[in-house]
Image (cartoon, rainbow, N blue to C red; front, side, top):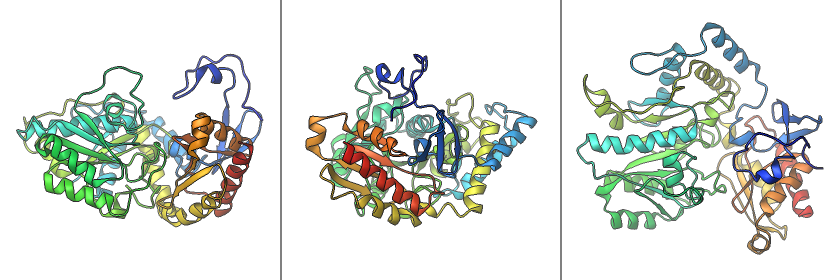
Length: 420
């Protein structure tokens, strides 16, 4: 079954082969819980929570009502200078209270890419204010994905910056699974020239790579020893995806900054931001007339987006959804592990949080580099939406998913593999 056919589209889709997509868009028209429907009436199981974000599922009236109520009051007002709206104040206070670091402050933006650029700029600004302007280097990991803005493209490890010319200088990559490689890079550059290290707890968009045992704790210790700031990119991993508020709690991390987005509103409206430790905030908050962090976007602290987030966090708490990212990681692993015997499968990456990936065999990828995209199409024809990433396809359903839905995902992926 092919996607919905339509007249030539004017919409330029992100990360898309537009010569193919322009006349065969798949038009999604409605959703309820873990299901979505296309414009031909076909029902599909949302195996990826849209783009890793529909944590509380689709069609939650509580969020729609909160949004409508806020729009009737005032849609938003800018948060520059001394201005603020009550939803922005309330959400910042709530997130700061949940934060995995002391005396936290919250800087809002419009999404995850905003959050990464905010954290990168703030890391460098912090060291300038500490009298260490030479600390500019940013270190990230191979296979990492940190959004598509300038800094995120520059530090990302998936190669998305290859076709856009020059990138932000002062960024380097280390193998994603080696603390020794990170230590060697710090020694090569000189830790006193490094501003921050960026890590994802689970590296989701790059292919769902789990952290090796003890890796994240060792990175934390290395940053503690060298004074380098630790920035945790939890854009995907927060708000229940790993079974905790920010994903960091599973390893008792004490980051200097945590980037968030996606699950903070479950995608009902665009919102992201950075939770900033008291240590990093102090130079900018300690005295009137002190330094100003000259950064911000028009919709920072957007009142209606923040109202959606507050309602979303209420649902995560009220319905006991936060823990499901951990409770369901074993059933998801079992559903995907059943595919490991397929001749086209190289490995299964799952077992930490409600997300996983099926990696295809290297010889298949060498013969047919587009195999992950083709597998996505075949799994969709079997009634489930997955996402092509790296060397295979990824799954990350809403936290409202049931075990039988996870089994359905496994069955559909097997059907796609057989078709492939």
